[in-house]
Image (cartoon, rainbow, N blue to C red):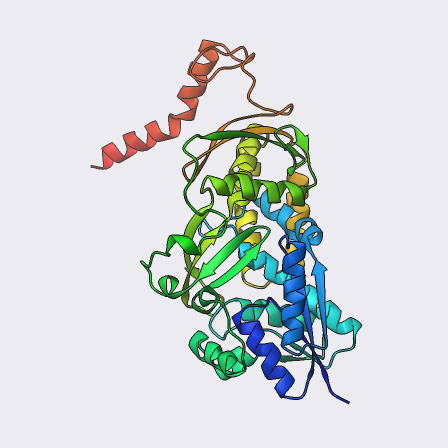
Amino acid sequence: MKKKVVLAFSGGLDTTYCAIWLREQGFDVHTVTVMTDAYTPDEVRQLAAHAARLGAVKHTIVDARPELFTDYLKYLIFANALRGDSYPLCVSVERVVQARGVARHAAQIKADALAHGSTGAGNDQVRFDVAFRVFAPGVSVITPIRDQALTREQTTDYLTEHGIQMPPRTSRYSVNRGLWGTTIGGAETHVSDGVLPEDVYVLTRKPWPVEAETIELRFERGIPIALDGEVREPVRLIEALNQRAGRHGVGRGMHVGDTILGIKGRVAFEAPAAAVLIPAHRELEKLVLSRQQQMWKRTLGDQYGAMLHEARAFDPLMRDIEAFLVSSQQRVSGTATVRLSSGQATILGATSPHSLMNAGLARYGESSALWTGAEAAAFSKIYGMQDCLLAQTMGKGE
């Protein structure tokens, strides 16, 4: 009886290679695609047909978008999490959910092995390995691309020899499309100043509209619930934002960062929804949270994003930080207005029933009903007293 291997399957270059190679090693290959983005019915059929052509015994597709939002994306929004102040952790979070879904399927069918198509140089190998071992302990992990140190050219040649022709763009670029954004890797991202060709982009491809577009987002306890007054389930709202903001080129960027293995890495990304939701949410928080709340949210939010990015999603500290983030969002309700234009998302303003900015009591730079001029003068004198004393002391010592 053949051994069963469950392969995390995207249908791209590397996992296509893995499916054929594993079959040639004598395995019954079960391909599993965990959807973290919307697939059209045609795409679902094409993926299943592709797996069948490669000799997969069975192909399974799992829609993980709801759990992706509930388990992780909402916390990234609460945290305003951006790696290097720019990258919204598109692949980081989705790989965790994908690996978890594949491992669960392997446990269900009592598979003998798990497999993924990650290379030995990037972060994804660690994310898959960790999740596989957490959710399918004792099941062996096979990594053909990593173990054989294959280049994309070698993989393409192997598939050609087996009668499989991959699209040229697939052979040249690694494009990972997901709900929270798309990442693109290729020759231009292997150097520090490479510029990707325009036709590689998926969500933000030019030409962009000349006219700007203004949208309104409503949040309830930190969760985005409505777009332009229309209440939507969060996954649908994010998908709609990816389309509308992407048309204007919003969310495109290049990120250079430190990988889990300790080397520098560079990736292009398109994350229109994240590029709108995070600054809109942050602006709303400025209205309703205290100064200290914002400071600690930034600290713990950065920690949460870093641990998620670095394959520490299952550490108990993550649940502790999530509890803090949920608590911090109790008054983060209201609306934010955003203008989309020429690759930029500009926050025009925000309102909240819990706003701490009360023009009826105090206006910055003008009068205040909360204190008198004499009280303000006394405060300023006491507030600056230490600086005055220090200046006098330093002057005496010179």
